[in-house]
Length: 324
Image (cartoon, rainbow, N blue to C red; front, top):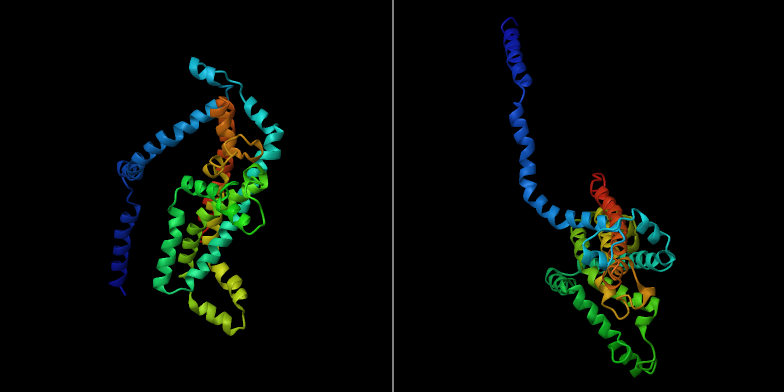
C-alpha cells in the first residue's frame, strides 16, 4: 500500500503537465489556415466566376439601366424602384409566377413518381438486365436539353409531327387543325413531358442505389405479418429511403424552378407568346430583347433569391443527422 500510492501520485503528477501543455499560437494559426489555403484556389475561381457576376447583377438591379446607358457607360440608380415595379406588376402574379411555380410543382411530382416506378422495376431485374436497362435510361439523361427540346418540338409539330400524323392516321384530328404551342396549357404539357423525360433517369438511378441497401429481412418480416406489396412499399421502402427522397425532391425543385432552355426553344417560348413566360424567360427577354438590363437583372435577382431559399432548405435537410 505504501509503495503503490507514490507510484499513483507520480503518474498523476506526470500527466498533469501534459494535460495543461498549451499549443503554441503559431502552430494553432497554421492549423487554422491550412484548410483555407487548400480551398483558396477553388474559392478564387468561384469568386471570379460566380460572386462577381452576382454582385454586378445586383448592382444593375438598382439602376434604370438600358442600352443607351451601356453605350455611354453611365449609371442611373433608382434604388428599389425596379423591385417595386416588378412586384406590383399584375403580369408577375397572374402569368409568370403561376407558370414558374405550377410548372415546377407538376414536374417535380411527375419526375419523382416516374423515377420511383422505374427504380422499383429495375430493382426486380437480374444483374445483367438491370445494367442494360440502367444504361438505356441514362442515355436520356445524357442527351443535352437543347437536343431533347428540339425532339419534342418535332414530335408535336402541328403540321408534320409524329403525334399529329398518328392522330390524323387514326381519323381523330386533322393535321394542321391545332397548334399546341399557342395554348398555355398544351404548351406547358409538352414542356412537362420534356423535363420529366430528361429528369427521371437521375431520380431512378439514385433511388435504385438506395433500394439495394434495404435489407431483405424487413420485407420478409412484413410479408410474414401479412402486409401486402403496397403496404410493404409505404411501411418499409418509403421510410428507409426518406433521406434520399428528400434530397431528390429538393434537387428536382431547384432544377425545375430555373428551367429556361426547354421553354425558350419551343415555338412561342422566346417571349413572342407572353402567356407562357416563366421567370427565367421574362428576365432574358427584358434584358436582351427589350434592352432593359436593370429590369431584367431585378427579375434575375428575385429568381436567385427564390432558389437560395430552396437551397437553404436543401442544406438543412442534408445536415439533419437523424434523417441522414
